[in-house]
Amino acid sequence: MGERNWSSIGQKKSMFCLFSITSILFIFSWVFVLRSTGHPYFLDHNLLPNAKFFATFDGRNSAPKSHSDNNPSITPQGSNLLKCSTRNVVLKVFMYDLPPEFHFKLLDWKPEGKRVWPDVRTKVPEYPGGLNLQHSIEYWLTLDLLSSEFADSSNARSALRVHNSSEADVIFVPFFSSLCYNRYSRVKPQEKRSHNKLLQEKLVKFLIMQEEWKRSGGRDHIILAHHPNSLLDARMMLWPATFVLSDFGRYPPTVANVDKDVIAPYKHVIKTYVNDSSDFDSRPTLLYFQGAIYRKDGGFVRQELFYLLKDEKDVHFSFGSVQKDGIQKATQGMHSSKFCLNIAGDTPSSNRLFDAIASHCVPVIISDDIELPYEDVLDYSEFCIFVRSSDALKEKFLINLIRSIKREEWTRMWAKLKEVENFFEFQYPSKEGDAVQMIWQAVARKVPAIRMKIHSSRRFSRYNSPKDRGLRSAKLPIHFAE
Image (cartoon, rainbow, N blue to C red; front, side, top):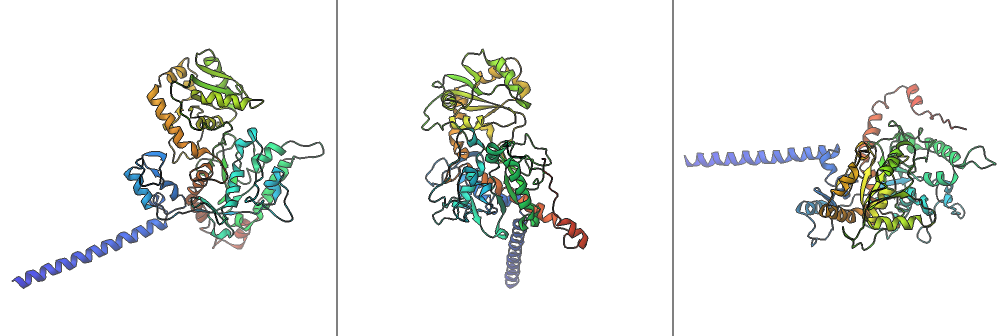
């Protein structure tokens, strides 16, 4: 009897072990399947190029966390995410060796011999100052890729240049389109077309002839057009690519949209408020705006608000520009203000938002169609106030709203601004968590969707008739306005 009982118990244990092993194998098989298909869980757990960014964030708080185990600001959840980050996954970028006329030669850099790129280890070509700087995104990203090949490159890097396009996650097009528009969009007396238009035409012809473009239909290409008027002629022919833009104000949704493209911050033009020890009482101006008041398109809100606010005490609302000492005055004004207005102008976005962030002046955003950089991972409501245009234009609505925000709430947003300001800083060499690396990480988060589009476009390619394949690989027609 006892032997039967022991035999029965042994059989049960064997069945339990077999069931446990089978369950574990089943779970691991599903993990492998989900991982290989890009399931959302694995997008958040260090298995895709953008995972490094998520590993530095607490899911409940968008502030960057220190990697120090002794830092009490790291929550248990954030600490676990850091511990799970066992490898640094970097976006692999293939960059075309475009002739210098498309990039650094626009900065008056003169190449020696057949050199395409400057040796940025010895001397970096300077970018023109003033308002030109606000759309200099292409310059900083290109420098970052060039420097990524150095042996002493930072371990915190988010993107790495590779020379084999088949190994790359994305293909980078180093055309300084914003600079080209700012400097060469006017037609000179001896020209029929501007240099800006000619370079766009040459760029399109170059790209559609490349094997990389033909292989993906341009879907994995990264093209920068941060100035709203840059690439004005070529954009309609390059729309399959991922654009890096300031906003979508001058793009039809079929050409550019938030699902396909990346919004990048402007480079702020006023000085960063270093060692800011100000507080609610030491900033005497309640609400600040200085800039062009009369604007076209959505900018009518500015002039209406001017008439509503110009007589309010402790509100500064006046015309201003970068001429003479305009930038210095704006710096002083924002550094001494509690709230700074960011109102839609010719387009939904404005550099004024990023000037406010650098000043730790709580932004008040009145722009219904604005898209914001990295908003998929950054909650702007923690340090910005959003007001609908229709509400802002109501008598006393805006000023009463701002006056209702008391010291404690303002101080919380002011502190958050100091935490996130580095995400909007452009610099060379780039540093962990700055604007350059944040943009690369935003691009990395687009990679799964880009791959899915490329893969789905190939479904019938192997079985198409020769005639269909010929049509598929045919050159795109190029028509540029004279």
